[in-house]
Length: 198
Image (cartoon, rainbow, N blue to C red):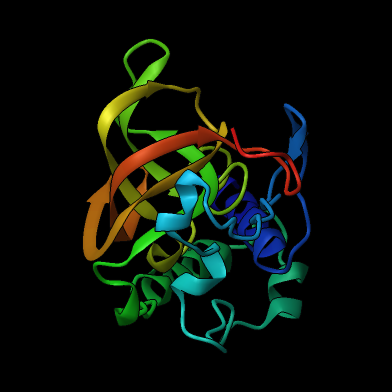
């Protein structure tokens, strides 16, 4: 049953276990943020990661019996119901009001909303590889709807650093709901921490 497989993939990601590999990243892989660099172009933005988008201690799996879910088979009729309850609970995920109007820089994977060939301007920035494409979207407080000042060259699920002004603003689209919107001013390919700024 497709709903059950999606549920299990979501659970694996929520528990930190990768589901399968593709293109050098495994489903659920997250990017490591780099420390802020004084005097660099990024110094005007506060470096944050996706963990900063939800209140400390918030648990997306609270109220769900992980052992019971893991024991369900593909044809278990309860799986679709559990998935629906999970989505309903996740849609109420809390946000961080202190991030409203803050200038931030964050690393994530791109899910295009308006790709034109190899360029994009509007996209979802998601915390782990495969989100919204291979597996269900994460909670809205882990998704950022980005609208760049200018389009840039990129591919789906490519990792990028995105800098701009964050707003708390919900948006819904077929690929997933976002609790944050970022007016993107700068987009740079992701480089592992320790790589010189370019």
